[in-house]
Amino acid sequence: MTSPMHHDGFCCAAHSGSDSMAAILETAETRARMQGARLTPVRRRTLEILLHAHGALGAYEVLEKLAAEGYGTQPPVAYRALNFLVEHGLAHRIRRLNAFTACAQPDHDHRAAFLICEKCNSVTEADADLLSRALDQAAQAAGFQLDRATIEAVGQCRACQDAPE
Amino acid sequence: MTSPMHHDGFCCAAHSGSDSMAAILETAETRARMQGARLTPVRRRTLEILLHAHGALGAYEVLEKLAAEGYGTQPPVAYRALNFLVEHGLAHRIRRLNAFTACAQPDHDHRAAFLICEKCNSVTEADADLLSRALDQAAQAAGFQLDRATIEAVGQCRACQDAPE
DNA sequence: ACTGACATGTTATATAATAACATCAAAGGC
DNA sequence: GCCTTTGATGTTATTATATAACATGTCAGT
Image 1 (tube, chains in turn orange, brown, cyan, yellow):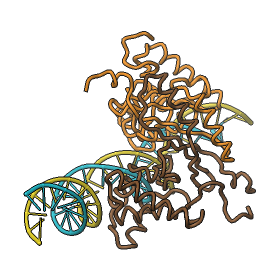
Image 2: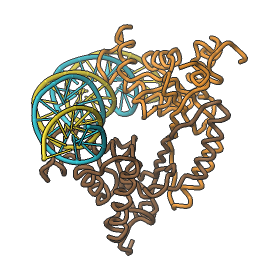
Image 3: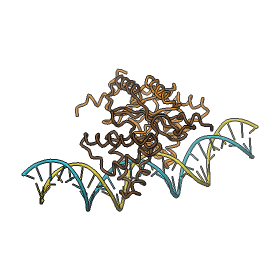
């Protein structure tokens, strides 16, 4: 953790040590199974691609990689796999970027907030428990029955603040 | 739902009494001026269109209306006007819906959260001051310099909860 | 082996957004 | 007042993102 990384927290699994990536895939497998879903090759590979990526990837970027590896070449291939991952809590969709990123903590249900750096485009998943509670309150005050929420913040990550212009 | 309005709070200016709409346009004019920007006819009309709308409108919906009134007929016309409004705090972009909505409180700077009903597609702008503070904290904890944020919640508005299936 | 449910792949199309450029209008210097 | 500079408006064309609809394939349970 006190590594020579630029970002605290989760950058990408490949650079947080191979352990966490294997662990996440393991968890993913388990989690999918428990939900009666199958983590098929394309889906698993898609998750790996996200885990390896720096920052979030667009669907077409994912598609390119999948296609290069012999999977289908058409958009629905990527969108289906990505949607599967999102629906099963293994990935998140970053709307502001029209992109997707692997979930950093697939092991427990959580509401996440994303910190998007407008300089380097890195995406950090922040714990949003406090936020979540505030949101619950706001929803309640409005008589709104909250299902799920998207929280995306834009600014500068620590590394880019420190970096000279 | 025997009341004339389905939603508490801000539905659309036209249905919250014509006063508020005139007031908002007035404020918009002033606010734009103060920022050294001009609220030109297309822009003003675009804002009016948003204010009149139930829920958020897609850029192409706005474009259709503008075109019908003799303004330009091509996408950039709508996008430019909409982006102008967003940049000047007169409208918000709802990413989940690929749509835009007039700002309910253009008179003061605020971070807003949106409550999107998945049944009737209504969009309510909730005050997010508490939320905002929680977000600041989360950002600070991550060493992230927060600029702006998008908070979009999905669920059911009060009217749709009450309504029978 | 058969079947029903789900996965994968395809083609085609829908929807959303921007690039690049020409023309036009307004604000300020002289 | 006239001219320049800047910004606004409009166009055509293109790019980017996402989904519909359908054919084929795979697998678990019977």
